[in-house]
Image 1 (cartoon, one colour):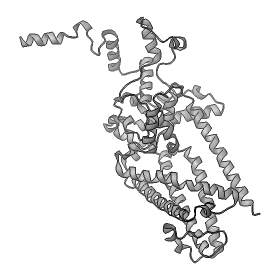
Image 2 (cartoon, rainbow, N blue to C red):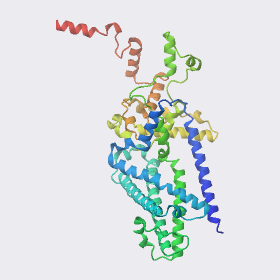
Image 3 (cartoon, rainbow, N blue to C red):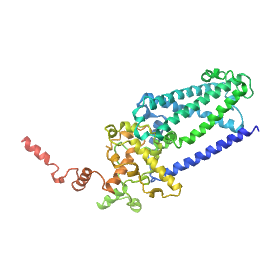
Image 4 (cartoon, rainbow, N blue to C red):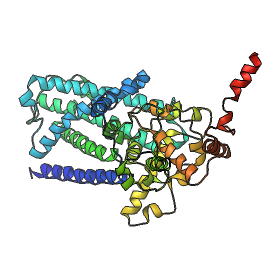
Length: 443
């Protein structure tokens, strides 16, 4: 019977590992619905961007207070989870605080530091709950967040609070048992935070305390494993995807719009300009722009799965601020939802992309994409370098080039550019008439 807890732990660990593997594989396959794209240039700059933006959270500090609270949670997530390694070893081997004999006094210092971080997480999560549900920060209460997105944001904060309380409860009961001399429990010389709640448990029998301590231990490790699985269904997937997402950031100057390779190739051929021989062999005139998720790049879909749903992009969007329907956050959420729908259809053996739906039209409307001013405010605001504008441009390209569905004023401008090489409807030979008229006036 003594090995039963270890067997149960291995079953829990193995089950969680299998579910996590399946979920990660699903996300990778869903992202691979997009077109492959090469973005491996300038690796030095990419590593620097990843370290500053994803690890250092550089862009978060445009708003100091939320940034500091987020930093506390982030640092705590990384450091406290180092203790999970000890939990796993203890669970597999059947030990208790396996690192304590080897680290001696430093172990107590580390545990106190972990508890201070746990307290910091508790306070930060409570403040974030207040911001979302009581003071109601506008960008956190927009229409696209109704339903599951709002519940998801609150759930994750509540889960973090409960997990931190489990750590403090476990430590408090653990130390009471240690000072009572119960076998297997190691005195740590005082844990400042958890000792403040020991009075709650001091009058209980040792057998009851063992039950509470073990229940808190199991709750915490199962909670951590469950949290890891839950994150893959949540907007908090950005905890992990922020790193590859920032590495694949667009390093081109803001405002530089990429040309369509197939169009560039055709134009060069028409004008008799030299073309890339390899491009000549591989060039295929397919769909112009994007109608559905398979027309987007894999980086676009990675962006969608990396979205934190924080709404900083929408809060900075001039179109949204002036009452237009466009919300860059909704663009990313819709793209992710459509990609998951297609992936789920394929897994279920259904029609997949041929289900009669598409990203443009069923999820994102022309009114939304036409409202975009291409100002890059959303790109600049995103804390993990997501690029909603890239998706909007591809959707607009499809609308203009495949459906001729742009507004009438735009189509007139396109025609003028095509025939007169300018947005205005007069021939190039008259382009400098204004200068001649100005000279006449001066004379």
